Image (tube, rainbow, N blue to C red; front, side):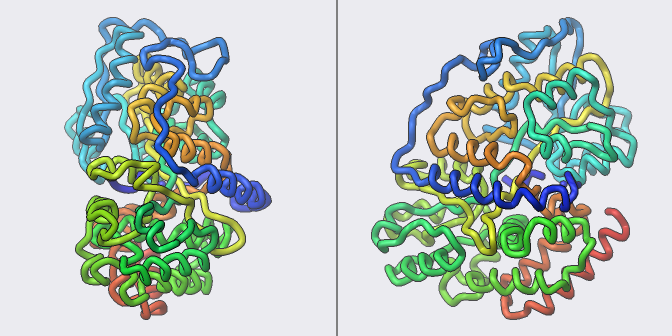
Length: 467
């Protein structure tokens, strides 16, 4: 997996007043996420049902498209790709259209550029960053959503999720898939042995980490080999500590990375990254640890794994599934602790964007904006929808339901992944920009000022060029 998200949403000022509601929503999510068992599915409808997941009495209306062929491009592989193809198969069944899935490579904008240059753009691309949507609009690749798709969006999505799919007031993206990136997963047996409890605040997290360390287990796995998880660590701390207005300003580079708020967040982050023996393998080992390995080494090894906790989003469940640990019993989760005034809600997502405008492409975008499509994939696991009309019972276990509930409860009071809002050269390129600068910081967490200077230099270059 990698982060799934990029440009902006509503203004910082208009949403600052919602901070209290955010805290309440996340607190509710925190309570709900404290689980003792993995629940079974209690789905109410089969995935082939033509009924919507809520008792609205209606379902999305789709045209007959016999003879229509469509191509959909996405970077998804493995189970994620296979499950999405089942959603596309339902669209084919309802409309008579035929759809080909086109495997794309990251960065997808480069992949699409080569397809478009060759005169073969897909009809729809699933773009994993708001910034990619803006790039597609700026390059005049993206086509606006039609009335039916916009109506389905308005019915099923909070305004914030609509806003991040819009560019200059025009709606281009349908956020079909989301990620809740404000979660810390932990080995339940290690916590039990250590007498540790789920932390609510950053100070609680430090206390819990010490308890785990004293029991003989390294507190954290950190995926330093992949730069994007490091940006997510920073973003959760920064959002909670500096607040949503500062977060929005830094995301748009309206304030510099040399700002005192960045210094404070990096200093806080160093309380874990720079603490001797708190990170599995130390800095050197962490920089060689992939995201997948950071998860699996937390949930293998019985009650003596390489680490007790791993930070990342709801999609960690997919990687836990590669171990013998069971989500909800062996593997549990708590929301990222409050660092400042409120707990953070950082999200990512993948949006369907039309590149070849047609009746078929518009119908598919409309379908992907409906609860009908999202419910099919929700039942298959490893997926989270920002569609508020997907019944929570569609998710296959209790942990996934609670994560979905906390995302929907946040309403507009979430923030999109900051690095995914940045130009790709700064926030989305291996070995460059923020990814590389935070890897260097993981290597030397005492160099706060130097890290700020490098971040600012790289950000200024990328935002200035728009690349």
